[in-house]
Length: 297
Image 1: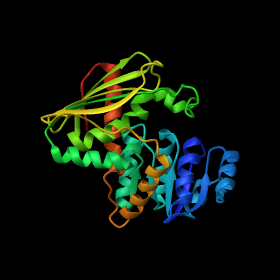
Image 2: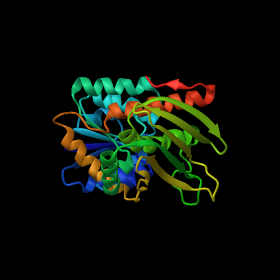
Image 3: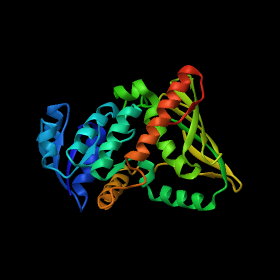
């Protein structure tokens, strides 16, 4: 499958381009970026062609990988879908439900394959653990604590403008939801609260009757760093594996699954799931601003 890459930043170069260039079922052919010099540099490093026009790139590929901020990704994903291209997307899919709905409608109407790269969900230990807890059942709720800092020494995301603006709710909230929803079921309503250090606390009611909480920040105190997703129920407590750091391996598996999804145009983590995540995040943000408990539409 011929792939083009949209994006030229750290994540694009170190993960997306590297995974596409080494995948046995992929012909990595093209890259586009908002910064032409960075696009040219990445293209030279991986032996592909740099494009200064998105439509010209789309004409040369079968699928598109995205490593862009969500506000930019949504519009370009819609453009790629209209051109009939399969989509390998980053999370979150978009920053508004309306933008997410537009991508979903186009993907569905053209029967395209789509996969969203929720990094944890393509990790073998996570796949195994989720299968076990789903089979066990009887879970009454969960607590997800994702406290990290993009401002710690050596972080490649310190200058990420969209992360600074939207914080942990939108950047790492999708990761937590990608683990909670398969076990506890769809979210039906949320209550959000803002805390110190750009922390967002979200309480979610699930269709199963379970209740989960998420505490999320990208600006935690230096001694407060923690990543944990713990389920509780009739079998006691179970803590899901944390991410092992092998983003390249996870993305390679996501690429394989996108290719496998082409005949049917369906995948558990496709744009439909991504749209539901956006709806939860948008409602949680609105709830935190207004103090109201909001239903998920």
